[in-house]
View 1 (cartoon, rainbow, N blue to C red):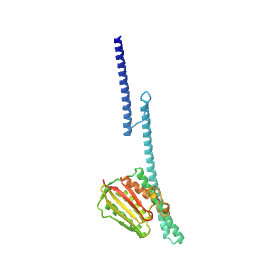
View 2: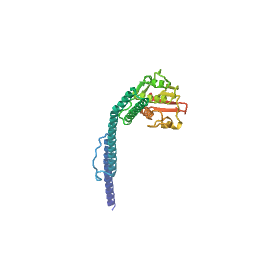
View 3: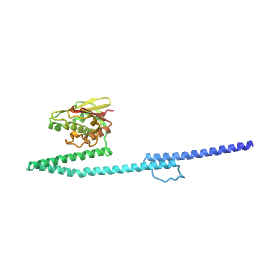
Length: 300
């Protein structure tokens, strides 16, 4: 009797061992299949296939559906980016010539012997054409940056050379504004010269635009271990504290300045550029007492 019990126990242990080995092998096969799927998804080599319940567990099936959705979404995003690239290219190409022609014709009209009212209308046409040209150019630049068509390429560059490329003296002189740019610094920072210049020009142009005649706009540089700080200070109209977070939004314009020229995209583009270079912009302002825009460019 004892021998029979021992035999039964041995058989039970053998059956249990075989069952555990079978489960272990199946689990390994499932994990290996899932790992293969993930590797292919990461390498963008994942190809769709059909797996029945007999071949894989429900976990595998769910993983397959999840990866398939991810691959499909990635393809759609890629296709949408291609469409956006084409659209941006078409807008840029198709609008340049008509806008240029409008500006040329309006300039020619102002040179003709026309009544003053007609001269004024021609000047308004030219002004609006310039505004439209600037708007399209800004939208194209912004879209290219947002969609990765073009990108900033930060490298170690001279801050002095960057500031020397800012040419807004004529715009300041038209309003009798004193524009002072400190360019006697010898520090360097990590930035893309072309795009960073665009960001600074947008900020300084705004400072000139919203500073009354006879005011001051000053650009100073401060050196830190990790950053180079460029301060653009003005004696302009200032910004309400609650409006500061809004001024970097696309197309946002304060009700107090809507009568002035502008489209509300310059600061949005400036922040996008500086952020892409791992820098940031800080604003301090007081209504009626001017503003200070501080651009921090990384040095390391």
